[in-house]
Length: 107
Length: 113
Image: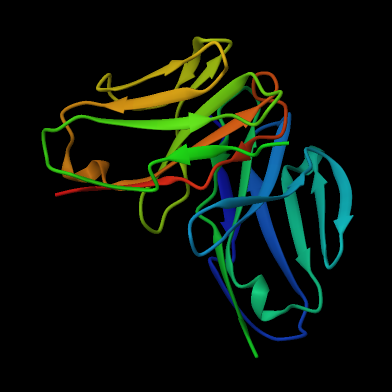
């Protein structure tokens, strides 16, 4: 399966700051998703983005498939953005997840 | 539109017992995938069911088995529980096999004592 690496592993932000999370993957993909895991464990879909750029409010994502990486941008961070962000990718049916980036936003 | 639901939310079992976890897929979806998430790690793929057939399997032993029903809901069964089976079990539903967006349920937290 695909290997997925996320960086940084931890990120501490002051409220209002901007940040970038990175996801590298080892092979071509036909599905790449970004998730936010809430404190109760549920994975909340942020983006389905095997290629291109998407935006949703203060969040945006870009995947450069030819260079095998994806970026998640958080702008004007809020305390509610805290949590673990996962990138997951596949080129068949098995989503492979990275180890996640733990984001802490301080008021 | 109903989202993905899982039951139970929490479960405590002892080593050697058997457990069944349940997942109802989002309406209109015909594929269910199961994942295991150990504490502090990313989810690991267990297997996927597409139209009631196992479509693929990750690196899990045969004591992990599953079913998908005609209404596309699914069960995950684990026999001979081991302490390392303690984890959050997540199911995801989607339309089709792998290329479509997967939507996750809230998970079942299993503790094996």
